[in-house]
Length: 351
Length: 106
Image (cartoon, rainbow over all chains, first blue to last red):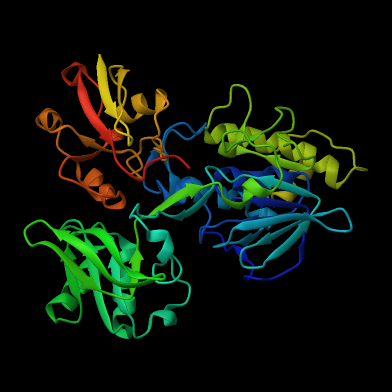
């Protein structure tokens, strides 16, 4: 895979031509269309890698409706797009969310992420698909009271759990990996899962079972019923076991890992017109209610919209023409084909 | 053909069903609160339903990928299924399901 230029958290202010929010297939292809017009881009994504839903939801699943590709998996499409846009040298900001949008004194847009990365550009393109991927929250009554105090859905600093009585919930890779990773520093470690079967990698499952056999941790095949504690501090979790009935597991930290779900997130506060969590755009430039802010792919809406990857590609091409006129108002845009234009071929590095 | 879908408030909706459609698609098309965010790829667990006990024997068994994906759903019971994995046909005319918690759209 192409080597990506990934910027460190909290860096900037970076200056670029276009800030793309979302590094899914549509955001990635926008880099190509912008690049042909000599526009540079920075991409921001909540995931730790490019590909969006293609990478997170269906990396292995076949896609049959990409023009010219009879069948391609989500991961293959992502890898091919990265190869296709490699000549244009985009900069990536992963594992963070575009949190704030403001204007600079010089009339640029300034996007700030939740890890304080700052990027400034004359054009913003929202290619955020179904929104940011965020951890699923179990619908356990009263869980909000404990969130970020003793219930955590993601872990940024492993050390904060040293010496704690930890209960991990879930059966996937995140649940198993964190169980194994935190067990050595925990006061006690337990894993709760609703069935005696795990979708996590078999090697991790075996490692967890070895820890259980050596009594280094507990495994509960049970369902979480209730959280017990006060002022946000857990003391135990009540679970229900098919044969054993209901009992409490002592813990001071609960780490639920039930996968990710998409939420619109802070984009809702960017001051753009929204309609049912989608961003209405025109179909000439795919511009939002705010001039020089565009929305392409699944996140936009217009009469006849189809949420297809191929629609997002088309939208990116038209958006790029409009973006060019904003970034370089004095330059005349000549429409050219990659087949025949030696200047485009030079940009692509094939000539 | 009909399916009967009970929402989280306990209200049952009788929905026109279409042969060949996924039960998830029928529920979504009628505007009931089901996120179904992966669109039927058995990749998200946000179309989780409880199938009425009487109908369980009429359904095909869960494949491994459905069983695995149910791990990311909440309050799993023995009659839990992903409604994107149930394809409508005449033998399911009258199917009754209840929407599970945690699948509402944002």
